[in-house]
Picture 1 (tube, rainbow, N blue to C red):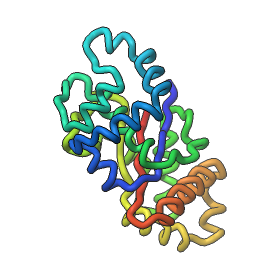
Picture 2 (spheres, rainbow, N blue to C red; picture 1 turned 180 degrees about the vertical axis):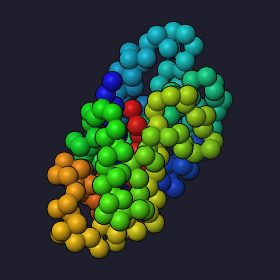
Picture 3 (cartoon, rainbow, N blue to C red; picture 1 turned 30 degrees about the vertical axis):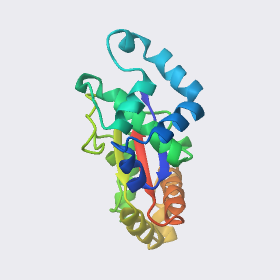
Picture 4 (tube, one colour; picture 1 turned 180 degrees about the horizontal axis):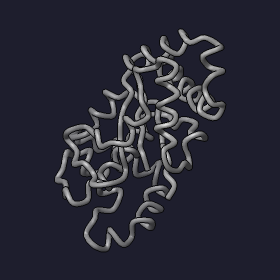
Length: 200
């Protein structure tokens, strides 16, 4: 089975504030901009929806309204939160992380550790760390964040590495780490922005 990371640079406080905001304008704008995407998601999860899961737009509505939530279908609210991140943020280049198999994220994390970059971990995106107001999914998607402070610290740690240290890291792992640093630079260019990542 292969997996993927979908990663967004976004103002984390802003997307969190959307939960329970009852912002009808936001809900309508998401429904308009992502109409085809929401319909595609409903086709993909047609069996679950037939068994009682909310349609994706209804899940977006529930997140914005702050409920009610059906805890059994936590995955739909996680995907709805991803849609809000997509609305407010920008999707980042995930070519080194989509698709991947097995222990790839662990390998990249080992490379980060080898370079002394301890402020961030790709494993952060695998677990269920959605804002507490949302039900957590039983399985996929995973969710995690790199805060602006973590991003700043990681960039300092990266820039402290020597060319020799980088050469000692396996080439493909180093390319993935460099990609992560590009994400971080994009976040650092916008005060208060961080990284939101979904493990799918």
